[in-house]
Image (cartoon, rainbow, N blue to C red; front, side, top):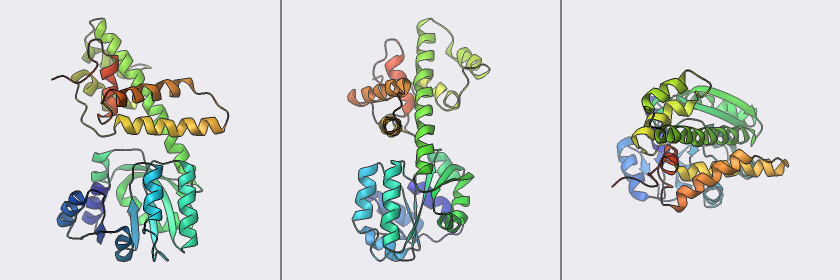
Length: 282
């Protein structure tokens, strides 16, 4: 995601000063492509940049980068964090930035790799309004729809709910198609019927054919799906709510991880629900 966002911004005329990745080979390859620096340390990214975009995996990674030099000499800089992490971590990062005289905005993405490259992400933003206004010219080039949700953490709450519902829809679709296959139904016909009825959903369009064809090239991994459903369930627990469908969905994705399927796309959940599958073909 980060690499495609950098490519998009360079095409739009924004100079890319530096890139960083824990996988140095990836960073060096991208830096060569974009004619920029492959930074050895996070502090070098901040030193060379006015605006720093971050895309990391989870809370632990978020804490690590903001505690490991990224905020060194950060006064006056703007940080745009696009990671799907807990609302609490976004608020923690804002406090860290405030203490350093820097600004930060969360720009939670509800799209995938292709949209990052095309500049058609759906972005939900949270943070101080002045930080959002400063980030807006950049975010507008990355998105086809840009929504300011509210204070820090609020966009992350919305993103958690988006992914919770998406994951449940994906699991339900896999079960519907799996049962259809077991009944000997034409799955192409079944998907067409779904698309014209109450079974219609966004994941039917993005994942239905992949489930049928067992094509689980990764755009959003099962491991990430499990993590993101977990974020929503943590929020539900804090509110005293019981969400049984979200619990069941998370368990399915955790089962994928246990069976070595966690790095498949979330559509790979069909491998657990189609009769006779339970794993990828040889």
